Amino acid sequence: MFDIMGKKKWFFAFSLLLTIPGLIFILLTPITGGAMGLKFSIDYTGGTLWEFKFVDPNVTPEQVKAVFVEQGLADTTVVRTEGGYLLARTEPVGLRGPEAAPTPTPAPSAVPSASPAPSSSMAPSGSPAASASVAPSASAAPSASAAASAGAGTPAPTSSAAALGTIAPGETLAPASPLPSPSPIVVPTVPQSGPLAGVATALQDRYGPIEATRDLTTVGPVISSELTQQAILLVLLGSLGIMIWMTFRFRNWKFGVTALIALLHDVIVVIGVFAILGTLFGTEIDGLFITAMLTIIGFSVHDTIVVFDRVRENKARHAGEPIAAIVNHSVMQTLGRSINTSLTVVFTLTALLLFAGPSLRNFVLALLIGIISGTYSSIFNASPLLVVWEEHDEKRRQERAAASKPARRAAA
Image (cartoon, rainbow, N blue to C red; front, top):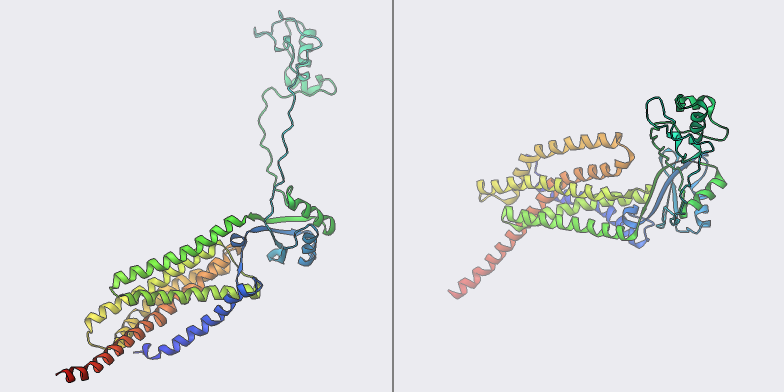
């Protein structure tokens, strides 16, 4: 049987090798003011995000940033993204300008017909001709004159007859039963109003037309600060709830604490990897990242509970054996189940990472890293930590027992 507990120092060293570089890049975030380390999206920092593409693909981010600076938005970053798009991030600005007050429109006045038909004129159907009354608009005038000239027994011309040439020059005739036509949906490719409208005009005057806009979002600083506080609170409450439940479930608070340390390892690994990727490639942490972290925490604890539950059973079956042997036997019994469960998730996430769209890529990447790290920490971190803790307590009990023997002999 493979002695995992006998090689626990090597596994601890490997975990340090994974976490220390990530911790360094995480700490670089506040030290460098965000220039290195974690890169947060506007969900957490607030600001305006505009992703657009010029017809001319040779326009550089530096040229675009110069225009933003000229328009008074000096704190702007511009990077090139997939598909030839340019992603500009600036301070929160309104996407719409101030609404103009509506101009009152005078009510239309009725224009009397030039030749109204007498009220005694009747249509063949027996109903009075509509043209006998005063026409509300000029468009009804042709019907009135036609009714008068045709005589009382001649029916008034229909709208189709009027369309064949009976309409006077300069006049229009609406159809008898107009059908409502849907208004076209116009999606502007550039901001049409607000502060960014001037920037868009200046960009197009200098570098040609903008072909398309893929994203245009503004998040205020109040919303971003609330989202950041909620994200931290969710992670802390989830971790605390897990520790309390595991302590209650196994009747030993060491199980809950070691599981929480393994969770901390997974969190540091995932955030550290994103800090490194943010420094090297500008990878950002968005709103879905917290969802991924909570999923990772739950999955990692699932594997740890499976191992610890087998440890609890084997402690009762093999009472008196060393704790290292009991835990090692429990890990080997659950190793196949843990690996098979994780591999099914890893295969699915790998397919999503390769074929899903860019909006889900960071979310899937965080899940993939966290699932692999969680499986490793449940087997090679949480269980060995429990062994180290139990062996340390057992050693202290033996030392206290050995120290108490001379005292009892002297008292006797």
